[in-house]
Image (tube, rainbow over all chains, first blue to last red):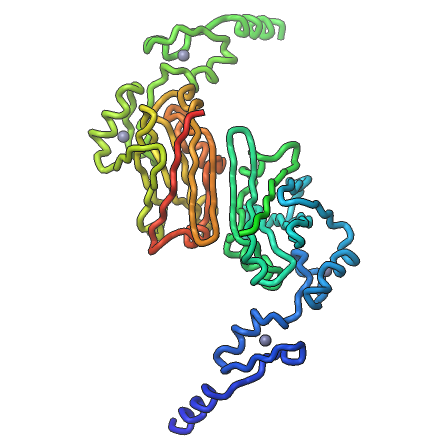
Length: 202
Length: 202
Ligand SMILES: [Zn+2]
Ligand SMILES: [Zn+2]
Ligand SMILES: [Zn+2]
Ligand SMILES: [Zn+2]
């Protein structure tokens, strides 16, 4: 027991280098802090921000846009702070993702609408905005998603996610615009759903 | 066959009185229009607007407020166009209803927050506003429900329901503010959830 306590004492004072040291991170940490740091370490490689896990690309933040333009050519980009994200054929069965890019304030934002069945027989839509940038940069912005219908409006306002953290945990926690298929019907027109997206600086 | 066609022809031209004739309705209708009319007939008795089906009271619109004050004494009333509807202990298990009254513009509105499990293992909250008044009167108003949290806001704007139609069909169709328990946690404070309610004329 004495021996274990001694080893714990050593472990609790020894500093370990971050696992992204070779990518440029100079931070050293106690083992208790290491995992938390590495999760948010700015030298951790970026993964492809496209929803779903089909693309395995990883690289630096600077390479993300060229990856998207080369490999995900079909993604549309709109310019401006205030645009309409039009999702077509929202009644398609099964899990579906709609993606587009919005450029404003000298940054690129990826808009994601995901339809999935978290609960048996209960399809839900999840809409969210992520910045092609760091978490720190993301905190300078706010986004608003708005569904407009006949005498009805549903609005969600929040801070964009950084693509470094991704959107899947936010979708899992419903920390985004969430609506079910009945609501989608109230706002859709001919199976197409327009989501007003506004980005602002804060 | 000839005889049936003849009878159908008669039925399709004969006018029937509304079933609420004795309550004052003077409308006569084709049998094909009768049920639709009676559903919205202003002479149809009003039911108690409290959510859940426990109270079986029926009466005229003029009697609703005195029924509420005599039989549902525990319901709080707040004055003003812009109030906070505070739902306490939202983590209570099972189906729960929170109800309060808001008075403004010379009218009484009933605010309802309902927690229920439409889908197995998936608890959802439904918030909605109904006017103690007719459908026609309800169309003169709009309401906004707003959840405010740390760098997040969820807003629903719509026309109040009349208590003559009730809120259950709107809740069934998600035609109201809908959110799940994860979202409730994001906005709740110590198990209490404040919903900003604003009524306006339109
Ligand atoms: Zn690091
Ligand atoms: Zn990719
Ligand atoms: Zn009638
Ligand atoms: Zn009652």
